Image (cartoon, rainbow, N blue to C red; front, side):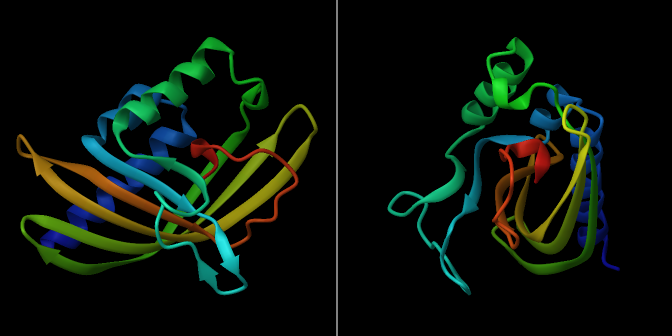
Length: 164
C-alpha cells in the first residue's frame, strides 16, 4: 500500500470513528473550510443525479459552514428528528487510490453503517460508496470533497450525516 493511500485510508477510518463516538468538533476539523459534502439522489435505478446545484440531492452542503450548522442543530436539540441520536457503527472497506493531481488525493471506498434507534428499538443498515478528495492544509490531510452514493435510499426514517 502506498504512503498516500495509507494516509488517506487512515483519515477515512478516523472520520468514521468520530461519527460513531459523536465527537462532532473532531469530525468537523477533518474537513477543509471550502469542502463540499454531497449525497446525490437517484434519477432512476442506476443513475444518480450529477449536479447538486441543478438537480435534487438527499443532502448537499457547499462549505463546512453547512456542516457546522447541522451539528449546531443537533447539539441545540432543534433537530427533533435526531432525538435521540442513534448508535452507529461505520465500516469502510475496499479503499482504493483513484488518482492524484494538483496536490489532491482522490479515494474511492465502500461503506456500511449499522444504526440502532433506541427509541423504536430498531436496527437499520445503510450502505453505499464514498468518493473523497483530500488535500493538505498546513501540513494536515483534510477532506475537500465527499460524495456519498447511498445504494439503499429507501429508508423508513430520517437521514442525516451521522448515518452515512
